Image 1: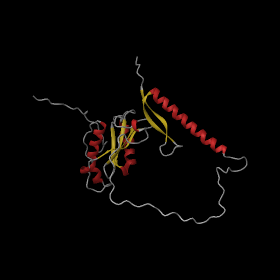
Image 2 (image 1 turned 120 degrees about the horizontal axis):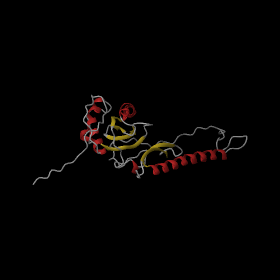
Image 3 (image 1 turned 90 degrees about the horizontal axis):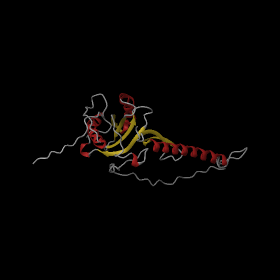
Image 4 (image 1 turned 135 degrees about the horizontal axis):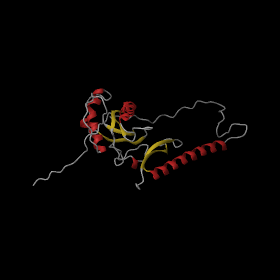
Length: 248
């Protein structure tokens, strides 16, 4: 009899990073008891937030009239108020990206979306950051359909400075986002194409370097692929094996 607790993937309600009163569903991976506990805690937090919002609204009302706490009286006179002068000063020179931070930021906490927790992917799409939504649709529509539901597909994007972002989704079910890192690293500036960013020539020339970097980050080996060839941009190949040759 199998006695080890199974590892599961489930959606957990999580507070939005920039909107405290909003919750989003985030894919979590871990032991079933731990994931069930996180999911129950998240659902309770959603109920508590809804109750607090309703209670505060009811507390501010008065029978038969609008609450002063909800509806403010209109000003008696409208007078022109000049705006304060802006202190914004545009920066001069080109943009220089900072070195990537370990364990990027995303829907999961940093310790859960680091290089140590990234799942293995079976397919993926590589495109510029300007075409991120197109890359996601391609990966989840065409490549995910070719693999089992529990497999993972990656959406990899790059910007003009060679910074690389990666999202990983489940191939089946609701195709939940299970891993995200807004900056897993950047391409060596010497390998960046000289062509204008956003043009097909730039994408064709940088794709191989992005594929190699993603493979090293994931610890997977991906087959070479010409940009003109149809199919997934990330096709797993033979596993990486290091052999030490000892000579006397």
